[in-house]
Image (cartoon, rainbow, N blue to C red; front, side, top):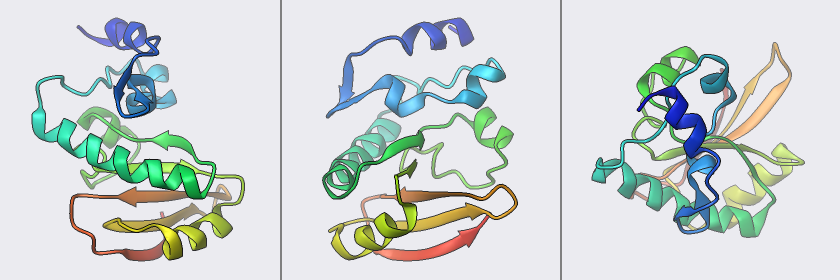
Length: 149
């Protein structure tokens, strides 16, 4: 059950948690380009608990702004490929997304989102790219900051 299974499973429109499909949770251009199986293990109950908790918070994000998911779950191989040394996406409790106006929506989320662990506006100055990174691990720390990656 490798990469071909991953590609096939991405076609399913079945909701696996709340209003999110498997494609929402694990699709990655980098995984496709590098033929990486980025399916979350079905029997990892801790991982799915984390994914469902983030999904619950992300539903609130969708009420506040109009986000497009850019990265949610990442397997270890994909996480390393994109250069991340942290395991937030691997453990299922982080999601990256963009909006029409990242700066404005980040400020709105800081003020209006009732729970999150960390909310970070991340940017790659060299590529002029910005996105919002949301973490929720069950602890409502509401830490927010900016980070040049």
